[in-house]
Image (tube, rainbow, N blue to C red; front, side, top):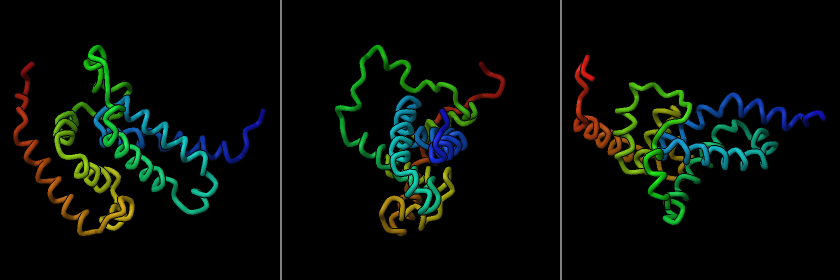
Length: 171
């Protein structure tokens, strides 16, 4: 059975971008398993509109928007956050990650700042979007993006300052 060209193009795009999308989703939510779910949902939505999205331009922008929306939706629905006590110990364990262990402190600090500020920081500095692109994606004003970036960076600096420092060679 031969794949339809649309499906072949979609698969190739997913293979190229899935790891980056997964990392973006993790930086938004702080949970590798939820990140996988968010990416899977986003890719499902992308597939159903693949032809139109590709014709309109870069699919990455569309998927970033979906990821942000899905994450916001998840945060707003407390019933979706229920987990059993037995599962809590593995909540933040990263299965097959491309993130470096040196990033653990930064990620831990990033996860302590408010979700809106974290979203702006992830889009601005991990996804390398401009203020205007971030504002368009989040459907807000550039001024709001700038203030959220400023507040988020200050909160991140504060969180990094309060983290215990590792002493070289200590175990």
